[in-house]
Length: 314
Ligand SMILES: Nc1nc2c(ncn2[C@@H]2O[C@H](COP(=O)(O)OP(=O)(O)OP(=O)(O)O)[C@@H](O)[C@H]2O)c(=O)[nH]1
Ligand SMILES: [Mg+2]
Image 1 (cartoon, helix red, strand yellow):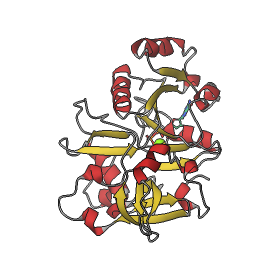
Image 2 (image 1 turned 90 degrees about the horizontal axis):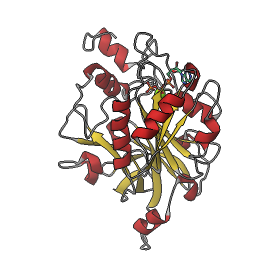
Image 3 (image 1 turned 180 degrees about the vertical axis):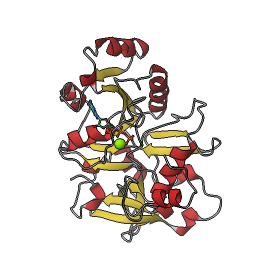
Image 4 (image 1 turned 45 degrees about the vertical axis):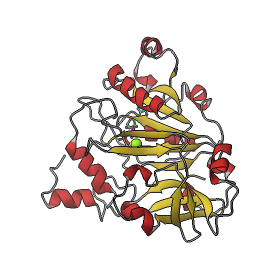
């Protein structure tokens, strides 16, 4: 089990993260032909990947949800539980247990829901030139505001002789939060990190581009599913390799959401928006391939925009 919606196999609702609170929200009244389904990915035009006890399917919000002045926060987000018809029509988004949200980088008056019903947010920061305690603390604030448990994972510990000073500094700054260091290269610290992974819980990886979120996801999956990209040598910043949020099923039974590198960790900060990166994130939903790296792939919307002179080349 990896891309949950790819599989036609049946799942128990519990294995998809359904909790007593969701059961309560669903209620006991019969809902015609509607079944509970979880949103595991988003596509353009409001199309969503859904997984229910009966398997994966594509879904779309009912016309009623799309009409009128739509409140973007009420639309399905990755991790949401929805009431869906067997044809994939989404009739209702069930109440969220937790909500990871930020102020939209494109429109700062708008709140964007990044994911819902997350149990644990692992905030990842890499132990190289890009490590920045201030940025980390904004991401931690965002994670904590979501209502999920927060863990700080300092990645790429193989790049430093001694991770203890950075660990100590983070522990001092965030005394109530678990802080650990790990390396996907040497696998040091991974056992400790795996202790945060409980079967049927939903865990989200949050962090700047290039900190190694997708590499960690692949390590936990046991094979290379997520696209990764080398970081820039001058400042160790990433290249926004991951362009969509998607829920993956780990062999241990945890549901893992890999996310695109976060630039403006939201609700609290005033950072200059990176317009080119935002535009790439927006355009990538129109690429032919979900895992498009915007290099040579056919049907790449980003390359097309560069070609057309609508986007500066990187
Ligand atoms: N030395 C070292 N390099 C790592 C480690 N984990 C990841 N990397 C490298 O860091 C680079 C970026 O990794 P990614 O997994 O693509 O980073 P990401 O956080 O998913 O980045 P975005 O998808 O752009 O947000 C790749 O070249 C990885 O091989 C690690 O533990 N040690
Ligand atoms: Mg990635």
